[in-house]
Image (cartoon, rainbow, N blue to C red; front, side):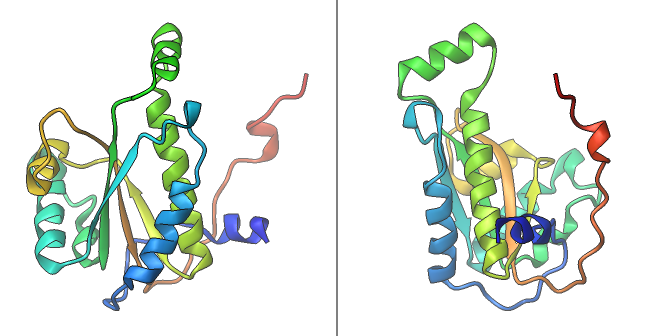
Length: 179
């Protein structure tokens, strides 16, 4: 079952206008909530934009400035836009370990949580698309967040209105080495 889900999950850039219920969104957010994180710090917060006013403000902010060259115009059509805030570490151990290794564990933790969310969404028939190219400063302002907050990823969510394309992936020989 997990194999077919992993294969089925894809980036969707064309959505049906049909709304996504709060109940379904909560199911997806619960999947994200269950994700592992360094020292169980759970450094994520999900700003779920469903109202037309919030979605339009966030979509306009995402695509403003140099980010508005057409790459992510499809976000305007998504029934839901999720801004994922990466929270500051409350626990010392992962922060210190990250400093020593020069690794941002909180960013990895957020990515795992978002992946859990996208896989649950795929299981429920929803489409999602990770977005990393957006005007973070403008989105923070649209959401009323302080300048110190961090938004590393945005996500669109909705019912797909397109046909899946075949996945093009590297051959196994090009992605691994056994020792």
